[in-house]
Amino acid sequence: MAGIADSAQAREAVRQYLDALAARDYARAAHLFAGDWRGPAAHVLGDSAGTLSLAAFLEQSCTSGYYVCGLRVRRFTGIRFTPPDTFMVGLEYADSAGARFTWGPCCGGAGLPDSVGGVRTVARDSGYAVLDLPLYIP
Image (tube, rainbow, N blue to C red; front, side, top):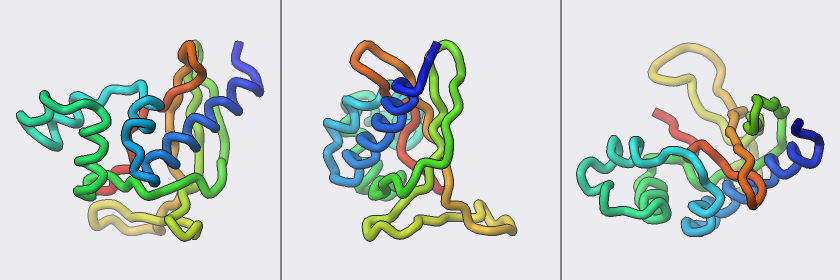
């Protein structure tokens, strides 16, 4: 059963992942990632995606602006455990100046902008790893 130490490790994995992306340390971000990226890479880059490493994909999609990669954790808003080994970590994003980052509403919709998102993490031998690619805003 997951406990407080596990949830702290899950939050720390999210913090380190976002910090690595913001610092453009794509090799470190790739090390902290354990999710599916080949499908999204093929969608974003087409046939050339098959020749890239995860770090190269992150670099290309972050520098092109496809993903928003310069964000950090402003504060954690919650955490929920999903057995057997996954935590959904809620967080409020901060921009490079530390201010609350907002986006939306999506796709011409009405409503207020959002600033809170969720990032899934999973247990692995070396701690927790992130399952979600960086923030995507259509």
